[in-house]
Amino acid sequence: MRAIIFDPAHGNNVAGKRSPDGELLEWKWSREIIYKTIPLLKASGISCYITNTEDYEIGLRERVRICNSIKENKKLLISIHLNGAGDGTKWCNARGFEVWTTIGEKKCDFFARKFIEKYKEVFPDLKNRGAKEMNFTVLTCDCPAVLLEIAFQDNKEDKEMVMNNEFKNKLIHDFLYPVLYDIATKIY
Image (cartoon, rainbow, N blue to C red; front, side):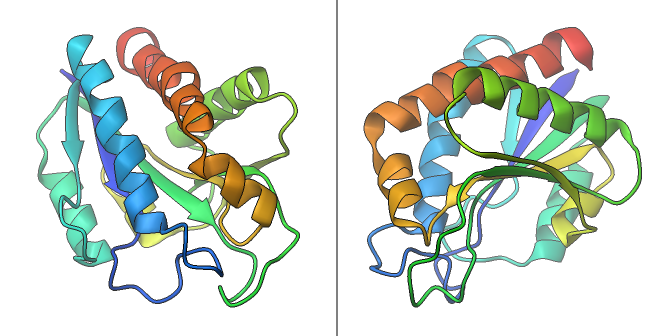
């Protein structure tokens, strides 16, 4: 069985993690994207799980424990976030999309490249900052894991873009769903 395990952004009790004007809340935006993507995957016969179904933060180690407790033959964890260049109190200039994996060449790097390729195809006019490596706690689970930073919540243009329903629909239907479907049914 193949499964996609969604890991939403930090909970509502984590400081910062929002646009400087407070209109864009990363925790809420991430969960909205996840909860709109899951039905598409389930309708295609793909098992889906979520590491944190609460609005508040349960802890990164707990998220890893939950992921590791899911007994599927093949699974992929995808953590969906918005990036930040500053401390959340003022607007910054950084823009773009990033994919994070753990340090070293692993299966997750292959999946990261799939996300980057599709992002370039679906959003050719948006900045792609490429793949980066760091052993973020949530990426150290027992399966391949990628962390997507869709855009910068402390950049005015990125903030307006990710709050736009047309962008969210394109992100879900033309980017996330096709990549995850291909990974779950054709690649993995």
